Image 1: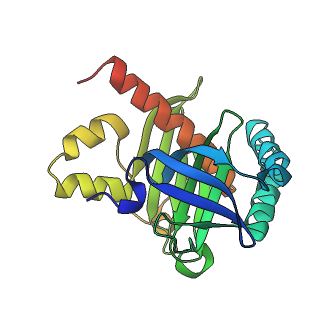
Image 2: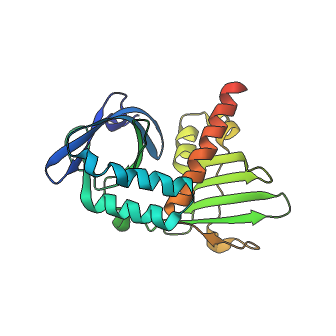
Length: 221
């Protein structure tokens, strides 16, 4: 069942201290990301350059700078759910086209998850893997890119896969997004991991998901 917080047209709010500075009207969700149109209010202009710098850093793959912008945004701003209750944790991007995307949790990230991100390359098949791992080393999300060209082969979420299984549409899900590795990273052999920042993983994830969704729309099964 869809969360009421993700209902199309529901409004999340961005605050600086006690002042509301933007309204985010939900237009869709591609979990763990929520997407919205942005209505800026007086007071937002102070933070516009910070969001623009975050976008520039992500576009140019300056991950340390992107993470620094995230820290500044989280230190200065808060969000509320459509019912007015506070959002404990979020990673928010506001784009220059008047749209926004964010991932969120109802508890602080550092109290509920010790999430890690890594990538590795499988020479035999020329596939680059990107993984998001939970605190026990199990894969939460997985991206597979065929090289050369970084063609998206998979961008699967364990939570989505489990939901598709419950709803009897597992084959449909796997045909579009693939699936995640079952074994924890501690049992993997013959890989050389490179650890990533959250922003680097999220950029790869978002790009791969769009590519797979566009491909499905052009060539539905």
